[in-house]
Amino acid sequence: MSGRDLFCQPRRIRRGAALTLVFASVLVAGAATGSFSETDANDRKSSSDAARSAAPAGHHEDVAEAAEKAVADGASPVEAAERAVSRSGDRWGAVYSRGEYEEFEAALDGRYTGVGLWARRERDGRIEVTRVSSDSPAAAAGIREGDRLRSVDGERVDGHPVTEVVSLLRGDAKDAAAGTAVRLGLERGTHAWTKTVRRARLSTDSVAVRELAGGVTVIRIDSFTKGVGDEVRDAVRDAPAGGGIILDLRGNSGGLVTEAVTTASAFLDGGLVATYDVDGTQQALHAEPGGDTSRALVALVDGGTMSAAELLTGALQDRGRAVVVGSRTFGKGSVQMPSRLPDGAVAELTVGHYRTPSGRGVDGRGITPDLEVDEGALQQAETVLGGLGD
Image (cartoon, rainbow, N blue to C red; front, side, top):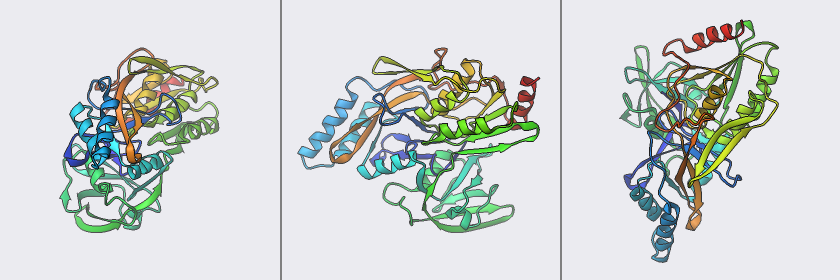
């Protein structure tokens, strides 16, 4: 599993109730969400872990009533709503204060507060830094790719899910602001040290493009923040003529489903991308016509590929557009939708699930690659791509 301090930030409902994973609208290697654009009438997130049933009818109303009663009684509407969500059994439901929700939406715009590092858990349980964002607190502190993260604020992290590690890196709602300090225990070879860094307001760079030998273009998408779909379209258009593409979705925590659909449109000539239900009513997502259908395409995935990234993978696989290489994806396929509460708070509650074009459910199952590979996945993807081009 892999993740970073922006997109792997699990949050616990206050008072230690159920664990919810937010992507701020996107989240992680161990938990994440996928979100629809809030301006869409049927909006919001696709997310979820092992198969969980959708919230029962009236779930939104129960939470809203609890919040309204709290206001009338002079109590906290947010805390009352959180208790209602916890009682409902909606594991992926979440309640945000006004400030938390503003941070949530800022992340969708590609801005977040953190230290600027990505990490993954190795097979032996160690947490390894896989990438450091330039001009970030982590980079300024001299942290490098390959360093081992041993502790956060004194708490050992070996063996912990990446999502929990990221939660520690970001801090909880009261101390996750820019300028707050976090103490990191690090190791490089035989050298171990402790470094205190201060969180900062950072911008995401969700799409990275590079060219390999033979005209192969690798397009890596870390998450589906606003504008990612258009960036992918530009990368496909600018790729060398006749060259194949590897779409690297490993560790992709999800994000805006609308951006995932726009990305699908870069490779499909219209047609179905996914269906989803909202309180029993079926909806469909379609690609726009005119995508590049001629290039050989391989989608690279792993256990950190989640939510909106799984939606995209399932569409490309079912439509016969891409060969999927890697390991089974995480399995987040439920749909959440937001509702406003008193004092500007927001509740995001589970209302349904999405399915791939062939009707496969993803929730709790994930997507099985056409070629399962644990080690050397990128090299295997290149080999497969070469065969597709023959």
